[in-house]
Length: 212
Image (cartoon, rainbow, N blue to C red; front, side, top):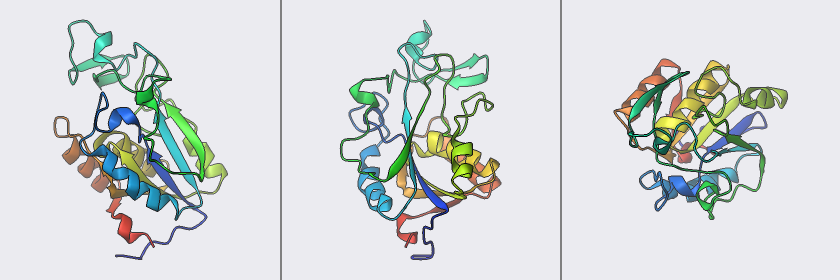
């Protein structure tokens, strides 16, 4: 398949949450998360259209275990919008942990989309909050610009990347996940669940080398 995919002006590279807290040494580190950076940098040179997402939580966010007395990270609780995994405090607005990895180079990015800034609701997807109803505005942005095919890279494969890919497909875009430009965390079988969701929604997993 190498060389089969040629980015066009109707394609967009969606770079998901390549932030310090999701890289080694961060408070919610994805194993080997920093390894995606050079791959994404190379990919970014091939796309005319790039969108970058940034997890951007206020202190005391409802998805933090520290906000729920007696709970610990990776416990699951029921919030008004459904089940929620509780996480260590991470990507707090204005902190170094919320900053992009210092070696990430995506100068063509036209949009930095911040998500998870509502105190009471988490946001994995680049398209919707975790209530699955509140939009981020990305769908309209892509449609307004005539972008139809979404190539997705970043962290973590089985959460924010997976949710973004599924929502992209649900919104009528062609979604492709660049697997070697992602790393996963695997909580309670989340990696296998992501792959099942991809299969159910016709989402292809490709390699960076497949992009000409």
